[in-house]
Length: 165
Image 1: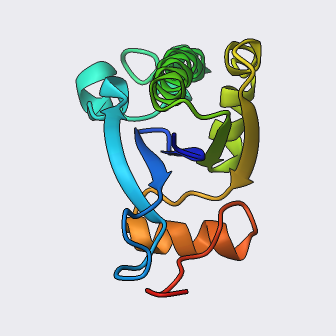
Image 2: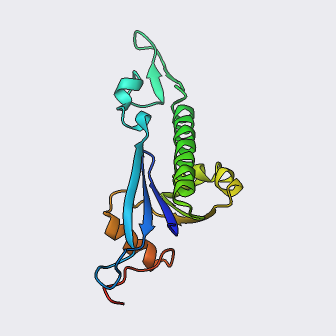
Image 3: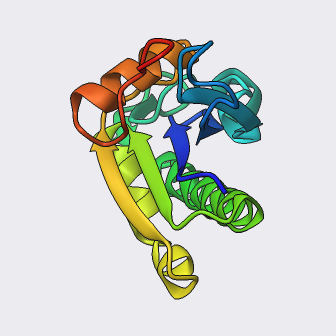
């Protein structure tokens, strides 16, 4: 049994970890943060120039030097829907991992805006009896050991212990 499952999330990617105890704590440091899976938001990997004809939304010009006019290509609505779909897949993946590893504690670490999107689907985890703790910081660019140090400093996971302790 694993005590913690951890999801490190940004708008473009999510990585999933488990905090696993080591078999011989007198010989090696532990617990260890082990990466189990990762997913990417395919729509965040496509450059805007391949989705939209204009590089940014806003103002345009009428033909033959006519007056400027505003327009809306619904870019923000499309991005919100993309984030919602990605959020749903993250929550489902972390639920599957928590059930597979038989854990009841999940830590979601994400930037504030993405954490807000993730909150909309947290009832999926709560129905399974999984406790969710949130950490508002983007840790996606960090190595597993650095992630562990950040979370331990915040008191969310136990710190890394040296061998024999």
